[in-house]
Amino acid sequence: MRILGLTFAGSSTPHRPEMARFLRDTLALPVSTVEGVEADLFDLPDGSVFAVASPGGMGDTARSVGFLVDDLDAAAQALREAGVEAGPVGENARDRYLHFRAPDGELYELVERKGGAGQP
Image (cartoon, rainbow, N blue to C red; front, side, top):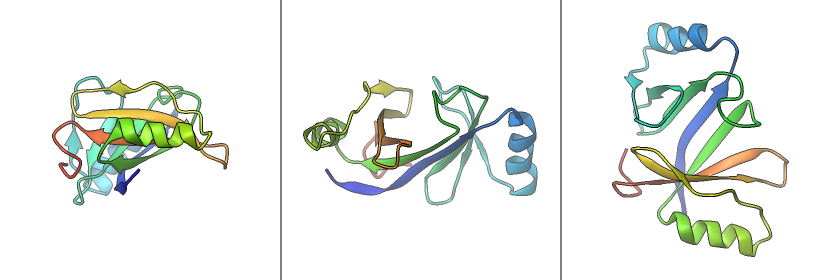
């Protein structure tokens, strides 16, 4: 498995509208839209994305961090070989991804960009 960087961070909150306004108006982050994503997305200059979802919008976690990989299938196999339970592969218009629970007990995700690993 080869981790290329962080591609995604997200938060789910009952204060989603207020948080989205803060990110857009105060932090001046550009709004992004990706078909198949049920969250407010904000693009960061390095190509990563911050997402704000409603409670339960990211499954059973309030925070999520996505690691960018160049080959999601190989990375999933490496996790499984290491005894880490990895969820099924999902996808939206931009990414393929899967969630896994790390030794700290928290959920994380591996993300492969459909246009190539280094593409924002």
